Image 1 (cartoon, rainbow, N blue to C red):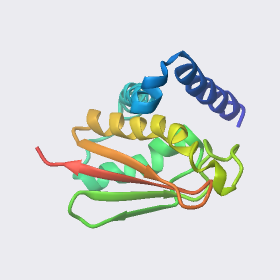
Image 2: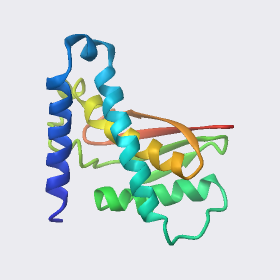
Image 3: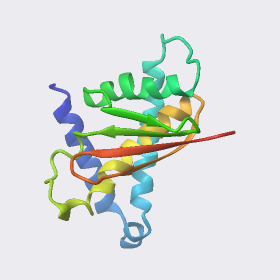
Length: 158
């Protein structure tokens, strides 16, 4: 529990740094979101290497997604994903009803505009972890009610 607060603080400071140091056209074009996602991707790659160092090989992509939902998410947020859904055709939906990086924002609808910048780093984390496990993917996030969110993972076939 002691390392949760520094992670949330670091995440908030990272967002503020990127947005304050960027040009106004970077903000308008969404380059800041891309920067956050790329940072998350690199961190996800390194973290998944450490977590799977002694793990046996995964049988299929569903096993990989289960590992992401249980072990990887627990390492990051001290809890498992609340729900994992799939259509068995390469689309997975990860649902977190109390996403910790959104919990400090108010639950009001007026804060939904700020939410994407708080989710980009996590999308990158998942994309980076999956890429190091051999799966190319596109990860997007959506929010209907704060602090609950859904991450949609589209596995790209090679």
